[in-house]
Length: 110
Length: 114
Image 1: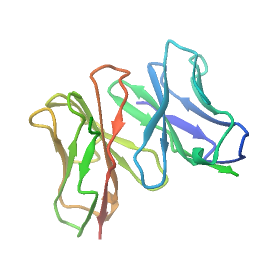
Image 2: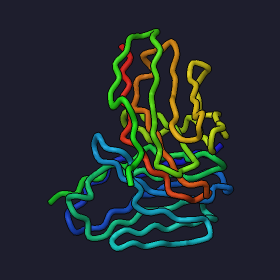
Image 3: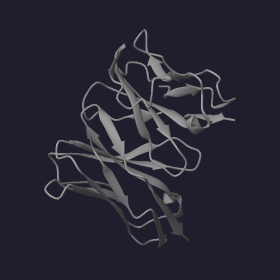
Image 4: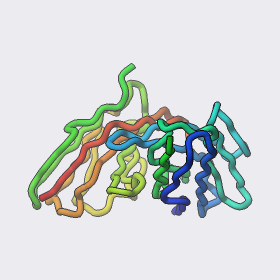
């Protein structure tokens, strides 16, 4: 199976600064990597995803990079805002299954 | 259109009881997933349906857990002889049939086993 590790587990940044969350995966056959944002008591919501044939994808203040050789991918949030505060999960699709990281609790300090 | 819905939102039961958790996926979504999320953890895969059949049930922790999707739409996760360790939020997600189709999650059912 697949094993996804996520770092850091907690992250505090000042409003306006950038935040970076990193994940590694173990199986090179994984081919799809979504990122989810989960606010307290709410459902996970997809914020960005990247397929294995792409190295980088950007959507406004959010970007994801993928290094297939090193088997790691990262989430970058620029110009952070208080409403970005939440738990962020990375995931990797291996076969029929999605394997999730353990989450990063991001706090943006106004 | 309507998103993924799950009922009940909360379920409190006693150890040893049987529970059923229901998931209504987005209309037209052929893929349906069940996950379990414990406090401070990411969702843990339980089972995947493509249409009516369980295409991958390797995540079910033991034979007390079973899920069905008889008409390829609504799914029910069934847990027999519940144990305190089964307490968690059970999430359902649905997507189209493509490998990289976006998964949309339901709000979850919080199961508490006393």
